Image (cartoon, rainbow, N blue to C red; front, side, top):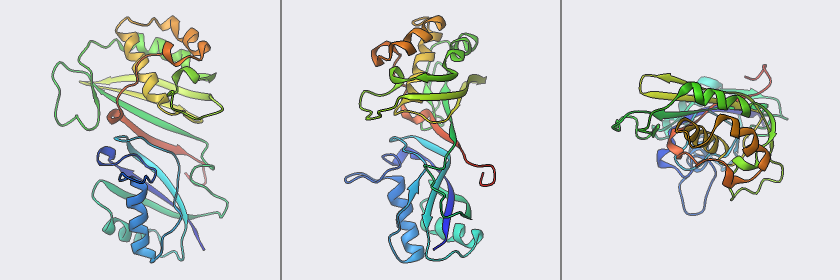
Length: 249
């Protein structure tokens, strides 16, 4: 059976995250339904990551063993016929049997959007966090440098996480302004539950003067969630890229 890699995009507003749940609709369930309609059987679909309720994806990767492979164009077209408009397949290819969407990943990049204006724009409400206070980009980026590198990020992990290993490596973190939108971009070898949202919430508190940029190393070293900032809401978060071996990416 060919092992297929799908790349999809989705708007997470109407879904309770990626993973199948008993009493709530998830992106995985909807995608599995469309795959079942195409192949006539319920297939085991492996996702590259868990995403929370309301979180979006510009690039989400899925792998599964298919009964047959009809080629990228026909597979993409057929699946999109069965999918709702807020989920779309945009790439498909056959990969090595050993490939796994999650375990073969070398890292990920997330984007978090903040709508920084006095009044909320309804066209941004599903895709950004409305933050009406002044934002100091230079101060945020000064603090952001302290996150780069390999650290124990227990202080930036949800208390509900069951992760045993909280050490992660951050490759890059920066904030940029484009009019009323502020774009946080963060990449690393992996992320803990709510880690990106807590980092963004902390950096916004830095901008407000509630946390000093120089406090970040101490907060990281404390390994205590209570010392970090608030958790930014989910709708501003996008899984933007998933990194694999360059042959596959």
